[in-house]
Length: 418
Image (cartoon, rainbow, N blue to C red; front, top):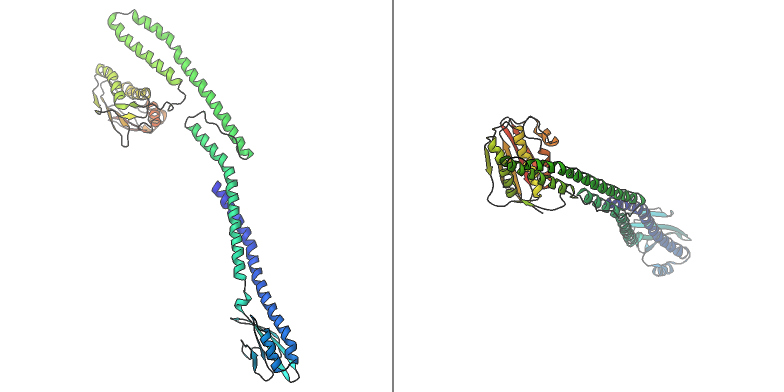
């Protein structure tokens, strides 16, 4: 916008300057020509009385006194010339006064009657004399035009900066809000319309913060309500025989930890705001060990390929664990019992990690639709895909899905910590 305003002012100023300078330059040329011709006419008027009344010797002396920058000559009554002669003898009849223009300049011719015949006075004005001072004046006008154009550009740049700076700050604040910085505010400035937009953005940011706070508190309250039935369930588990009690108590503890994580997650202001990272190798290995018990019960073959070193990624441990649980949960929920699956973790080019979960289920017909909706499109994995996709994108990566009748493969790309 700033550049466009400057270009607009430059174009407008150039048009105005051309409209002023071109006529001025033409006028300067005409004035210089008129000045030179007036000087030549003055020479004619000075010599006419002398040529008409004086003898040849006196006229020759007057020519010497009249000579200056102009070339002056007199064709005497006998056809001979006194002084300088620049033209041809047959250019004009001896009795005709006039102006003859040629390539080299302009001649003014004036016949003068004498008692013994007719003499002709000729004053020659060269092209350089006709344009004397024109080039210098044009340079002055051109320099003045350049100075005026530069001043106009300077003023336009200052004006454009005063107009665009508030808009630039408004865009920067909008980007900060889009990135999750809900504390970003605009300092209203600039034209009234831009100030109104800035105030509206500030009100919108405040309202968004209020709504998000209310939503987080509501989610935390709803998760907290689960503690009462969970406590009752724990008491029921305590009354069971020892073998069943120990197994169910572990499940209740895991459910309690999940509720705590939900409450903690709900109270986080921005999903990426914590800036925490984790070791993808460790987190995926831990979740695979958790699900391996159920895989053994359902006689599912489990292939695990983990690197022998940590792979830091830009995602919180809880988020990555939830994404892996969602993918593995889909395997158990949407593939026939006994279907095998594999989990692979490998380094990602440029840093980060790639997590691949592949099963041998029936697959589904529309992988793209399943990713968009976060649900299965054909009886295979899909219900947790939305969770996994959002986790991958929040980590600077992406989710890729491929499916066929022979199985489904979900790939999570996770970026390195920042």
